[in-house]
Image (cartoon, rainbow, N blue to C red):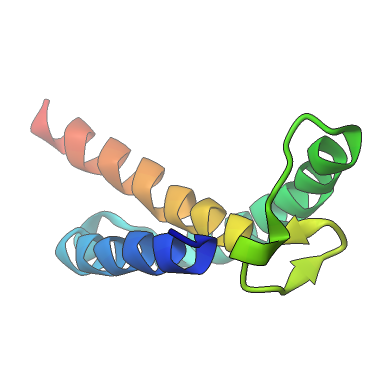
Length: 95
């Protein structure tokens, strides 16, 4: 399985999740948080790839990179940005 296929599957599941839990997502707070988290992902993904801690088979990526980091890595950051606070808000409302 290639990284773009895996990313498409994850983003598809995430899209359904975002529709179901849209009430628990603070969309106004999401934009600045997304900017910061994507910047941190850019910096630290490149550092861990450059250091050799993580390595990608670039034949299995989409071929788009931001320096050393494949573009697919940024999709998981976006999922976490919505998933964590929405689950937190939903679970908090249940207590």
